[in-house]
Length: 318
Image (cartoon, rainbow, N blue to C red; front, side, top):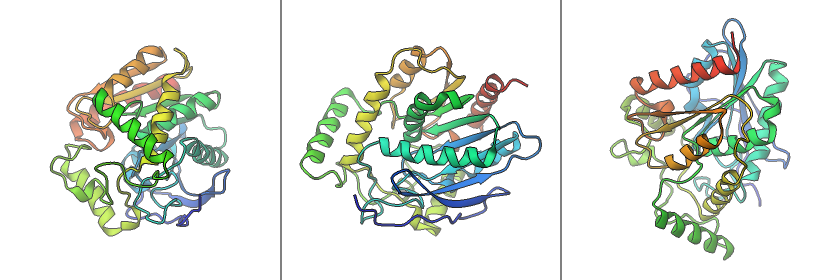
């Protein structure tokens, strides 16, 4: 597919200290925005962040600073089709990918670049939502190179009723196979979540963090991504099926999976099934959290970071 919008290395807003950004290339030539931050103080390790659908590097500034202060080099990148990486459709707001394997190309390129910059520092990965699903597959492929993994509200299933999920699956397949994969799925349009407003949002209870996200997109609309297309949805269903079919106990490294008690975006039962099937995975359900624990209230953040610090101590004993 022709790529319609080039990648940019620019970083917006007040980035954490020491930022370096560049455009890197996936194995199929797609341009990706990548950024790297050095650890503050004694180096403990390196962690690469993989964000969810619609997200962009700037949204992770708070977590990046938190990991820096814990002694970690931090890497972050925009998946193809979002942020300032190359957009795949003429309408840059349509969320599209033809196959989630393409996201593995992105992950490989970002991880290899990150390792080249951080040397032999022990490496972890963190993925949220869609990025959590993609991270699960990356871990399955390359966990011998990792010492730990964190999945935040991973998209191992969608937060739909069985009937609605079946209908979405059928519709996405029919639309894609008949040439309409680049069209918005039912109920989706050019608007992003923040453009729909804080009231009834599905991401966070925290108005300050939501407003920060809202303001970033208002000032830099080229970061904005709208709804999902049928092609993206079909590819997502196929990838969720691949991960769910992996044999029990396939995770071999210390791992943490976070779920949100009030999540309506992804399936908490799918997350629980995954955790129960993998003894190396610790599951923490965050009470009074919507879909984005990492931009939730301070009360949720306190529990979250305690769980993360416990995982870091498992992966890298002091």
